[in-house]
Each structure stands twice: as structure tokens, then as C-alpha cells.
Image 1 (cartoon, rainbow, N blue to C red):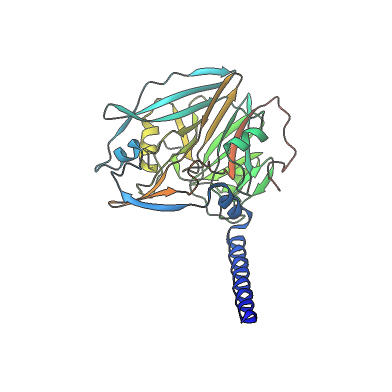
Image 2: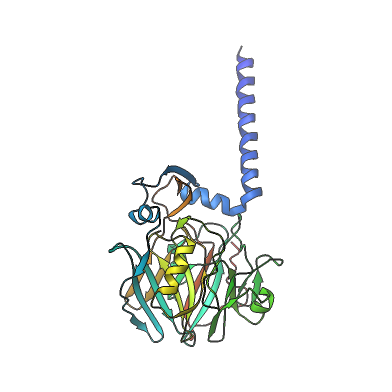
Length: 340
């Protein structure tokens, strides 16, 4: 009897070990180190099904999900100079007379500042950790899209080194920078390879919210709501980087809003969005930090809200765009590709 019990215990233990190995192997095969970083950091993620008026959605999201979607207009903008060539502002998003969202704005003169594209694929670096690792970065926001293993999902260039897919069909836009210059390139009539060729730091992203013809280029209509980050260029050649505090906008409504907003934008490119769309600004005594949290898939009357077990956890940012003073020493080639 004792031998039989031992055999049963051994069999159960063996099956459990084999099961764990299969699960761990499956996670590693599909997600790499990023998958384990996600589990450790926030316990994974899942979608909660709810209605459009569910109180678990933010007031901005519930307002946006009305039919028809209400129009949003910009409130007054007051720019404050934080350093020579670097200004910040907050742009109210007013809907039916109420401020339901705010876009945190940064206006930067490329002659005085450099832009760096960075990748941390292990899923262990969020806005707080980026701040600790980059004490000289004045601005940190999320970058373009990343794949299941945390690596760039679009072509990027990091301190002169190409990363991301070598074969890619790009018809939206690219942010490029080098030597005191920065630009957004409309890729509808230009190959992304040539657009990135002479840049030091660059990233292809989508959609192009405002093209070089002054119109919006959001081709897929969707009511998907999320915290959003965009990078734009104004009529004076300054780079404007903005992040929404809430999730009133789908991509189409954001594009229309930015076209009408008093920012003087000539081009604007969407970056990745959702809980990764965080922002940090540190200039002297001024510090502004946003922890993003919102993303919802919307289809008809159904809403699925992105959620995670560890509610207080902040999300990792595998792709980041940072701004430094040009007088700061530039990283060695490839140094922004984290190998940890």
C-alpha cells in the first residue's frame, strides 16, 4: 500500500514538472524573456467584457462611446519655456463644454536637443526604470510598435544601428533625426530604407495622422480607445510630442482633432498607445509624469477593457523615445539596444 502511494505521488509530481516545463517552454518560445517580464511585472493581462456605460471605463471613454461620437475642441494652450528651445503645455480636450481629456505637450527645437530611440525587450523597464537609467533624459515617452518578444515591430534606427524587420511594407510615416535636425517623413511615395538611411535615430510607425498634404491618413475606421502618443512637426520646424492623459480618442478622432488644434502642425505621426503610453519630463525643478492605463476594443455595443491582475503595476515600455541636450555625450553606436 505504501509503495502504491509513493508511486502515485511520484507520478503526480512528474506530471506536474512536465506540465510546468511545457508551459515555461511555450511562454519562452512565443514571448521570450518579455513574456516572463510581463508575468512578473503585472501578472499578465486579459480583456474584461462590459457595456459602453460601465463605470469601470473612464468618463472620457464613456463620453467617446456615445452614438454619434461627440466632437472635441481644444481649450486654451499656454506654453511655458522650461529650457532654451524646450517648452511644455497642457491642451484641454473639451467635449460638450467639459474638459474630458488633456494632451500633455512638449515643443522642442531640434537644434538644441537630440532624439534617441531605445529598446528594452525583457519587459522589465517601465517609465520609472527608464528615468533611473537615463538621468540626463529630459523627456521620455513610448516609441513605436513592438512584437511579442519585445523587439521593434517596425524598422527603427538606434544610434546609427538598424533594428526591427528588414523587409517591411511601410505606407504611413517615419520620425527621423540626426545632427540637430528632426523630421517626419510621409512614406506614401518614399521607401522607408531611403528615409532612414542618413538618420542616427529613427522609427517607422503608423498611422500618419497628418500627411504632407495636410489631410488625415487614418485608413482604418475603428472605435478602439486608448491613451495615445504622437510626434509632430510644426510650421517652424519644431518637434511636438504629445500624450493624452485619458482615452477619449480613437485614431480617427485624434487625427481630426490635431488638424484643427492651434499647434501649427504640418505632419503628425501616431506612436504606440495604451497603458504603455507614459510620459516623463524632467527639466530642472520641473517634473511631469504620466502613468498611462487605458485601452479598450470596441465593436458595436460591446466593449473589452484591457486589464491585468496586479492593478497597481505600471506597464513596461519596450520601445522608448527620449530627448537629451545636444551638449550631452552621445551614446556609443548600438548602445541603446539593451542586452540584459
